[in-house]
Amino acid sequence: MGAHDPWHSQALQAQLDAVWPGMVVQIEPEVDSTNARLMSRARLGPLSPTLLVAEHQTQGRGRLGRTWLSSPQASLTFSIGVMMCPPSWAGLSLAVGVAVVEALIGPAAGVLGLKWPNDVWLRQPLAARRKCGGILVETSGAGGTSGPRACVVGVGLNVGQPDIASAQAETVAAAALDDVLPLRHPAEVLHRIAAPLLQALMQFDRQGLAPFLPRYASHDLLQGQAVHTSSTAAPAGVACGIDAHGALRLRVPSGEVVGVVSGEVSVRPVIC
Ligand code: BTN
Image (cartoon, protein in one colour):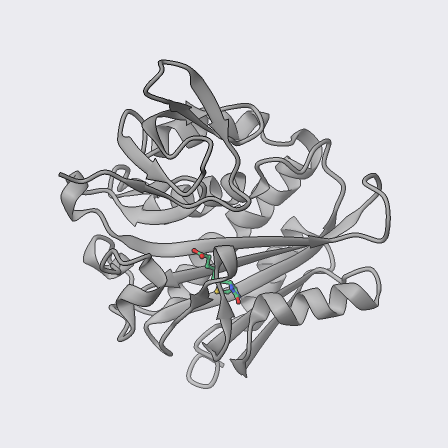
């Protein structure tokens, strides 16, 4: 199987089914957007638990309406679709970021971190820090705010150096995981992160963001950094962690600490 299926999809499916019963692994050579595909399915009815991997994604979606570019062989692009009913949805994408970073770094703690809300960056001296991955969480629910909703968690990671770098990295040069970790093929990365990510979704479904807050703090690259934001209410300040709802706590020039919510805001460190 290995020669024809570099993803070892049956083994992966067996592993994931043990974590989230019924999980189906689907590997496609080319997909417009794995998030868009699963969101379309979710609109038709309750979503069967699915891990959809695209070897090549032609219309990848990023946060804030951006495009997510990737290159076959060098990029891992996948989405997980499940039905969930957490106590609150606030901060789900941060919990996903924590799970992805922790699964990637393993004992190599310190080589990666999170740039709020959920970008995966190489943890290097501030001026050299670069984005190597992003997360896009979308939900779709049949009416009302309670009850289970379909949740699609999309993850894009540069495993090797992509050709397309800067467009997805908000003008910061894009980086690759293999700059800092001995990872070679996107399948290797998927096998490392898929089960921990599902476990994190299960934990979030039961407990919400609370158990992830201290873990987020230990990966928070913005802590104590001066940042600019696209929020008109708080265009600049010093980042001081996240609150219980996943908002970025920003100490603004007046001395007040305000919460910036992730939906429509971009944040970038001030690098002198
Ligand atoms: C971001 O940093 O802006 C989020 C990027 C998320 C990209 C992934 S790639 C797999 C999944 N499918 C998509 O269309 N987007 C996500």
